[in-house]
Length: 472
Image (tube, rainbow, N blue to C red):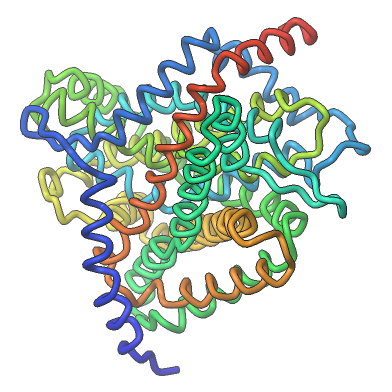
């Protein structure tokens, strides 16, 4: 099948000026000792820290309870909702555990030095509390349709809390803005683009439109079946890709055990500016925080759309399950990627290179163990990309339902249009799409975090009541 680049060229020409304009607003940055700091990162991290202290470190106190809800689920078969706690967590992880874990972590290490890993872990820790807050509230304020379908996500609690304070029009506008941003972010062509890059790198075959069409067709088969099919598929795909990738990373670390102590020392020294690589303390901190917030999406409100579908009578239960998500995504998967990159030393030739392509660094790290390991990374990257596409397709469909009504026609038209756009993802210019998609994603955080602050007193009361009831 011959790939015609003309469609991709037209998309590039259209998206480039739009993405540049939108990203200049959302990613407005300030210079901190020579390192660019996007203010949206400050916005997300400040919220995560405030929510952690306000809820008395629920990310620590509720950690074991969250795992208990996964392994010993409450049988709420008569409750509204479509999927179990484990399926909800898997569906949400499908949206956050993606190629960013493989491709973007090495970029943070290259630009900020190995110390970025330390700050990434710390940011993931605080992000657990933000995820707890938004997912608890999403379940509490979800809408149950007469036919049993669930409509849920931050757009509903955003609208509700502004109504309460007498700002109905502003609340509706903020919720609409969130939904529009979510629809834009669901066009996650980065995943198609970077998984194709690994495919072409390993196989030597470059057929971007063909690859994109195959990937988009697989996504369509899953998402047109609704949240139950998504939940059933992701409960198999997400653990499988996790075992595959984490297992491979652990093998590489096992083969480099003597180098681990020195790597940990390098990470610590770089984190506190004792090593000049990557801009010292500030470079490590900013790049680590950026990667953690971009990876876990804590505070963005995206995962709350999936968690709202859970079958439960207790909205708080899903908050405890959801706080596990940044732990798995950032503290475990991203950290393992970073350790592999540092232990093998493959990041060193790429230091200070603003044009670095992250997946190439990870592939080189895998290849350092065995020559065939890049093929394993190819399978892992394809699974990571596919799961993210499925998760975000559902988020976009729920946003479309909020904007245009929850009809079956709206749902099918949106999903088919999205799959068509995704099919072009491997062919379009990465620079033309990355800023646009990221801008949509982090635009969601603006109204979402404002609503979380307004609902914080209520959330604290709900947490106290639930923990008193459960003896936590």
